[in-house]
Amino acid sequence: MPLSVLLPLVVCGIIGIAVILHLLGLSRPARLEGSARASAVWLREFPDAPPTRVILSHDGQAALIETEAGSGVVWAMGADTTARYLGGARIRRTAKGLRIDLPDFTAPHIRLRLDPDEAAQWPSHMKDSA
Image 1: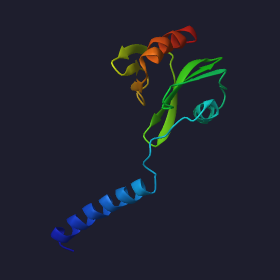
Image 2: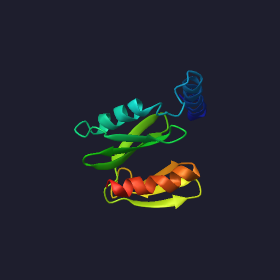
Image 3: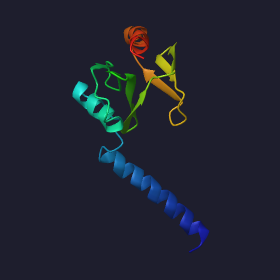
């Protein structure tokens, strides 16, 4: 098949798949709808560390998790979620929330969108239990 036919066919196929996924609702950002959901996401990553406290963000995009082993964060990454411990993290406030720098090459930086009250309170919870 000539390249002049193959290239548009591949491009249209990729665009078509993206449109179908979006129309089916599979591109919707993940939400942590309640502490039970945030706990389940945490336990999926760290089954040996049950949460003792869960603090959800106002928009359901992140949760601060406290365990006996230390504090961690659960956050939405597109249509999926993930979690990390905060040991050794550097936390900085930004105009839109917090930036967390982790000593973890799989998630070196986390940007959490938080309202101003949450951005002021979360760092103290993170340091108290780390």
